[in-house]
Amino acid sequence: MKMKLTLLLLVSVFFCLLVSCGMPTILSLNSWEYVLANTPITPVTNLVQGTFKMDVDPGVTFDLLNTNTKGPSLMFFYTIDDGTEADYTLNATDLNSFITGFASTYTKNGYEGIPVTGSKELVTIKSYSQNKDVYLYALSGKGAGATFNASDQYVLYATSDANNAELTSFTLTKTDEPSPGTGFSLELARTSPGSSPPFSVNATKLYDYEGNPFLQTRSDILAKKDSSNHEYDFTGDSPSTIRIHLFVAFFLEKPNTNNFWSRLVYLDAIPICPLIVSL
Image (tube, rainbow, N blue to C red; front, side, top):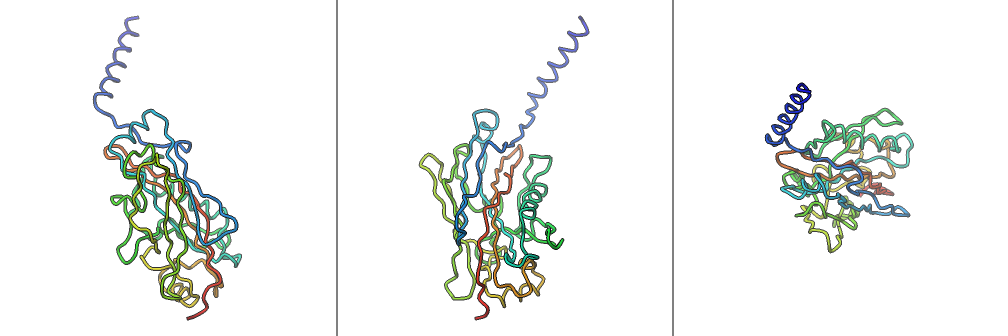
């Protein structure tokens, strides 16, 4: 009996020390505590659409989000394929490999989010059809040096009250540049219900990872393939179309505990067809 009492006292002392030392609580969201999903559009058009909502019940995670948390902030990603030539068409296995690759690259220990600090070749997979490297990139702002980062809360972010952040919809729409044949950007729009905290954006027009318009002229794409740039590698020798596959994830920054990345979500692909043969 005396031994049991001693053991109980030791456990109690250890617990008190653990609490008094302020051991940090892990910030981690389960898949049912938020909604981040694509909104299917039929037929396929020049835009992709999604929806987002935090759905955390009162408790430890709710309290963590309620104090000194930046975000959630949404970041958008892309990869490019041919879309018509079978050997250069990404399938469901390939697209899922980007999702698992993002998780293994930017989350460690199963919960700790690592900020994305660049925009080039963030995830590399081997394509199912050719065992060829294909890369995931981040959409950026206009011009050189326009890469988004965690300190700026990436592209689209809630300004307060993370627990109630919601976007009824967000869309990325293909928008041609003013000069014919100079490419296109992706225009970001969003709507929120009145109960949601405000969302701010760092840019409403999004470009490739270098801050340049996406290409839609065959000669420009072939020239890019002949360079050290791998963005258009997974297209045919003389492509007549390309597709831009778009993904999204959100980030939470929590000082003194840990950051958090959601699961990467595939939104859909925008076909660019037919390509302009030449100017």
